[in-house]
Image 1 (cartoon, rainbow, N blue to C red):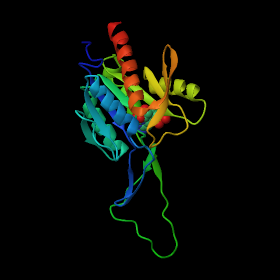
Image 2 (cartoon, rainbow, N blue to C red; image 1 turned 90 degrees about the horizontal axis):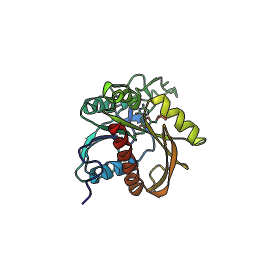
Image 3 (cartoon, rainbow, N blue to C red; image 1 turned 30 degrees about the horizontal axis):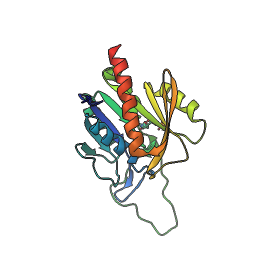
Image 4 (cartoon, rainbow, N blue to C red; image 1 turned 135 degrees about the vertical axis):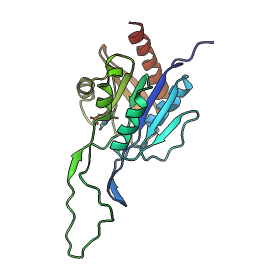
Length: 225
Ligand code: C5P
């Protein structure tokens, strides 16, 4: 029988949203369900890879045979990913990482003082996990193949191409709108140095399998070169 497409690969995946605390009971997050990243973890495992899934707060079961590490904030996610990336051969960033976090997080619940005054929130920028990993020596030397995602509401090809270059990754995958948060299907636009191709609308599980095959093909080419 044919060898599995990702046999021998160590695949590291981020998925879901991040949660950025304001105080012990409040925070900001986004509507990412984590379904696409979890589907990719499952497909990569089925293709024979050792898979580590770094998940923000989501309500999804862990795919069979996948090692899952739960994190909360973007900073937690970066620390966990940085520790795992040393051993990885493929990094797939599907997480919807919060772009900003509150500059400070209160130790105790912020209380209303009865005057009608509202708290002012100041934000600082979060680290870009994908760009950080893509700049690492392992990624730059081709030992770690990095894949990014993009959700855009318009001009997907243009934005995805620009994002591919800005993040310094060989493959950037665009979610073809409308927003697919929480849905079970999606359509993808794959953008690499040679051009682009579309994976038409299908279930996230089916698209994940196709994406894994596309990644495996590119790994064979880059590593044979
Ligand atoms: O810049 P933007 O958020 O649109 O880029 C999306 C891609 O970058 C996704 O692959 C996402 O997982 C990754 N990303 C990240 N860390 C961030 C922001 C985005 O890894 N702070």
